[in-house]
Length: 302
Image 1 (cartoon, rainbow, N blue to C red):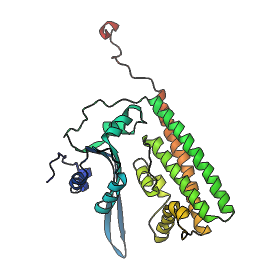
Image 2 (spheres, rainbow, N blue to C red; image 1 turned 90 degrees about the vertical axis):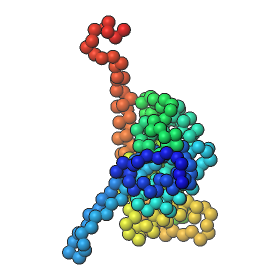
Image 3 (cartoon, rainbow, N blue to C red; image 1 turned 180 degrees about the horizontal axis):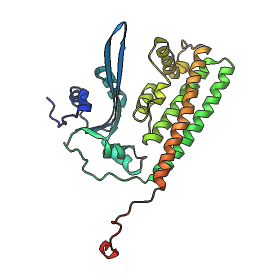
Image 4 (cartoon, rainbow, N blue to C red; image 1 turned 135 degrees about the horizontal axis):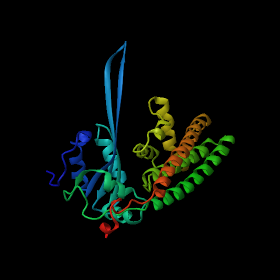
């Protein structure tokens, strides 16, 4: 029997209704907050099939733990294995780390605590019992610009190195570099768009995290057919395989195919991040709101 308080979920989160108690009982978190919920519907019909509609929902959840022990990989593996009514991407951080990051971090936790949907709270409170710090829009812009400049420069340098390896028919070295290019690019996209300092290395999880603000990065790596899944799995395996396994092998044709996909990702990242940085710049340059009602005599503002 779970003794902790949890809320009656709104219609958008009904698929989580039966699963959340299991998650809570297993990990005893302080708080679970949804910061993204994307629903997909696919309708099919035709001369040779019955009409059908398929629904799938992708949830992005922040679990705040009482313990300082990092357990994100464990939680994500558990969710992927036991939740079958959609997809869940988990971020897991301790309460201590979250509250510390709110003071001088890039704004992710501040935004989630302020605007996210609380699915569970150990103390039963929808609103935390502390003031959520406001982060300066100018600081958010500066952090995003610095981070994207650094990650983008690194990614493009690695990409040029991968191109040289392909020119010399060194597919194994090329695919290792391509993996690094993609990781750096996805981490930059996440940091610029949601202000989260990701230390995730799994490319599939990074693509899923990007879905909380855009489907476009994941759409560049479709997984609809067996050849598409095989190619992406090669990319996932390349980081450890190319470094530690003498059995890892990739053809020059596959390496070139993945090179082209990641080239598209680099181009897309430039466009998406440029647009987001412009949005942040407009917010940072906007005049501060007045703290009095205009039009009233000055004496009434005293």
